[in-house]
View 1 (cartoon, rainbow, N blue to C red):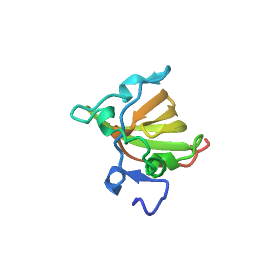
View 2: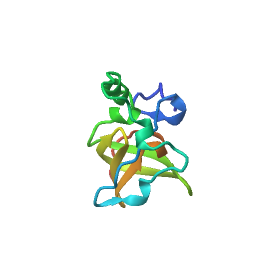
View 3: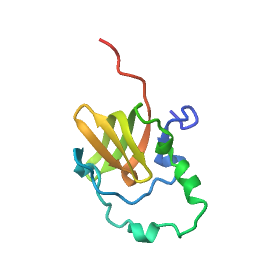
Length: 126
């Protein structure tokens, strides 16, 4: 599916800026999903200058910031051991990460590791 076919879908290939510094893991969140990537600049090196009026608009354009809190989402992210998916309810979204309540618990996905994601329908009723 292309990003144009579903406006809630985002992809690293879409040309969107996905890089953001990681933040500390919150209690109850799987910590290995939020880690620094070697070779990426530090938060100080990527911070916007004070008074930058374009920063709020740039944050609003981050694809995951358009996902609705409380909605069911899937986010694919890359770690050293390969690709992973987090499927569940979006609890938190920030320029640096998202937190998803999955069947295995809360997962924090760092923005720099995100590959793609989208809002998905509710699970089928059995």
